[in-house]
Length: 131
Image 1 (cartoon, rainbow, N blue to C red):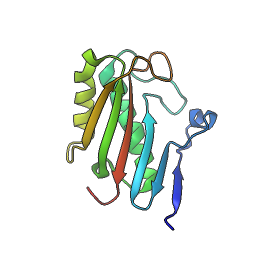
Image 2: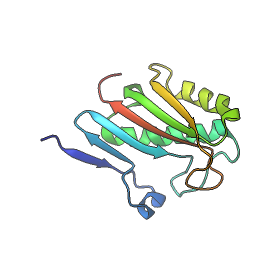
Image 3: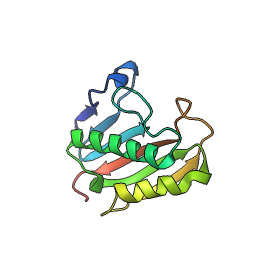
Image 4: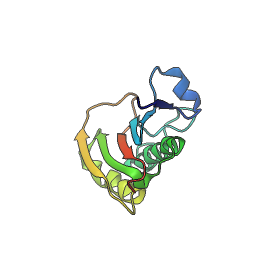
């Protein structure tokens, strides 16, 4: 049986929620929706889609590292944006986050996220060694 490994960086805000930030099963890593929170749960980037997207990808990068993976191993992302008119900012951050291997990608408009002021939430699936 393949072992399930829970991935939870020691971010103070994460201890308040009852879910795993990521799960590794075999060589596959599933990352829960990541938003623009710093380790203390403060929104990074204010009203700037590019800055918030960069922070969300930085959080994904940190969770992947716990699993022994990198952004090059990401094969699929799903993004939820509160304003599709700001898609260009998200797209620019995505291009920065994946300079070598662009994953399959979906973007969906979402009227609200978990906290007012958040503009983007991104989930990811990675296959370790695929990059």
